[in-house]
Amino acid sequence: MLEEPFLGDLLRKARQGDEYSRQELIQKSKDFIEKATSNICKRKVTWNEDEMSVGLIAFNEAIDRYEKSLNGNFYSYSKMIIQSRLIDYFRQEGRRQVAVSLDDVSQDEGGLEYEMNPAEIKLAWENYNEQQLIRERMEEIQIYCERLEAFGIRLEELEESSPGRVDARASLVQIAHDFIKYPHLVEYFTNTKQLPLKQMLSFVQVSRKTVERGRKYLVALIVILLSDDLPHLKASILFPDLERRVHNA
Image 1 (tube, helix red, strand yellow):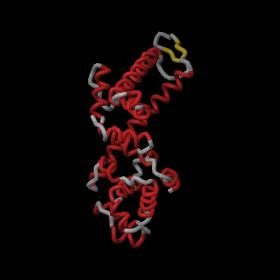
Image 2 (cartoon, rainbow, N blue to C red):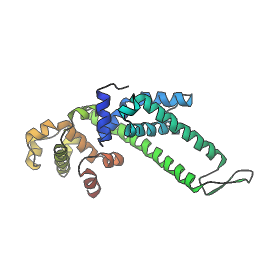
Image 3 (cartoon, rainbow, N blue to C red):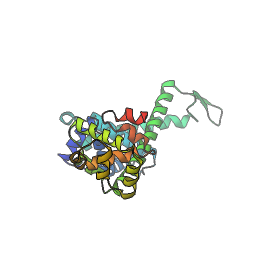
Image 4 (cartoon, rainbow, N blue to C red):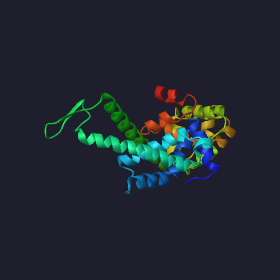
């Protein structure tokens, strides 16, 4: 588990919309989430099970709702939220055992009908879709981490190397979009796992100092923009103007 002041810094940035900080916090807390979920379920729960998805969603909720002055220790608070959401899940699953499907009216083998409340149906589908989204995002993050490692970058390093100012981040986003317009630059980048600094300075309007200072952050952005199989990660990174540019590309 993470400790202060690093934990508090990640929490603050995640609540402000920094997706890198949120994902790093989740990655660093995976053992905690797994242990807490398994303890509550009183059995070993794996990452491909629905209960673990519920635990992960609850941990995300804890990040958004946590207030240090009110909730004390973050991990104690997170475990409480995980327990609460798992109890809700178990109750919901208990109702589903009565129903064969999520149709308005379900029928069991004995011909008995059980009429589900429309609100229950809506909530069940919302929970299912949210769990599915969490699974897909975690898979994308794993793929993304592997691709970053090919460039000698770890996800947690991006927190340290990301520009503090919004305009500086916006500038690097623009540079990344300009960069991928040139096939020869992209080819060099993907083949050598390095930024073609000299070549890109001839085609992209940017200073050498800016590129060198934000190299890791820029590489991380370019990797995302070149990865068509990371749609959720593309859409969820909260950089100025990035989502609109990605969808309009």
